[in-house]
Amino acid sequence: MKRLPLIISLLLYVSFNNIYSQTKGLIWEISDANSKVYLLGSIHVGKEDLYPLPDIIENAFKQSECIYVEINTTDVNPFEMAKYMMLPDTLTLEGVLSPQKFEFIKEEFSKLGMGKFVYNKLKPWAAAITLMQMQLQTSEYMPQYGIDFHFINRAKELNKPIYELESFAFQVNIFDRISDNPDSLIDYLLNDISYADKKVDELFKYWKNGDDQKLTDFIEAEYSQSLGSEKIREILEFERNRNMTEKIENIINDGQNCFIIIGAAHLVGSKGIINLLKEKGKYNIKKLGT
Image: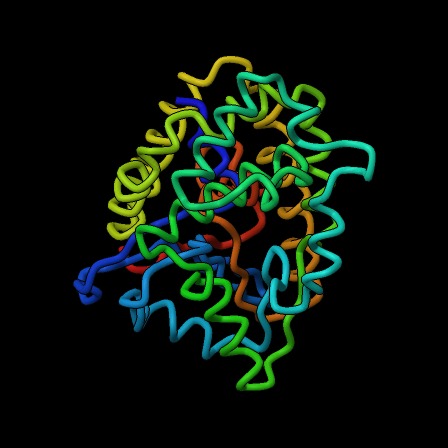
């Protein structure tokens, strides 16, 4: 099982049902003597029936002066995005990948009715993400129903300031850094793609129950089956966790009372942001909804 870490580290895709009175989500209150922030474990895509979110999450947003997200996707220029995702003029995906791996990509896109012109100029990681997003959309998992997108739009409606913890260019650079072996990257990102929705449903079960320990156990079990993933995980997850923890500390030290939205996989586990903040020994950390 080599595909799932992409979902865990970049886009924690989760499905939703209608029993929201029982949904807890993953949200923490972090405070010191002068400041209080809310830290929400994010789902970056969802289904239309996701909303309304639990009151405990919506109330935390209402009480906050501003929001922070990993990146403000509504401010990313589509043409700039495409530029970062494309191979240089002299290269094609077919030429970068081995014949076997390109045939795999070709077959998966063909199942979705997409011809080679759609993906042959994409970088390997961009082709993988595009394929994953298109695959999930066939199961009605849409980015416009994601948690980040929801609160970015809400903040705009209420004139709440929106800040980024990272940037689109920064996240693109992360994927370029792990692209030294394109065939291995495709294996890592897209193995078992046909079972994506089932894995997503399992992830959702833990998010819905607010069970960060079971979510952690599930993530670790998946990584244990992913040989050679240590370097990729360090770059995609742990390095970013440390950077975002430092930025969250700066937010608290500045006295800001903000609502911070980060992919749930970045929050949990021994190297997750919540534990990194606990290790500082200077914040009151309370999980809400328990």
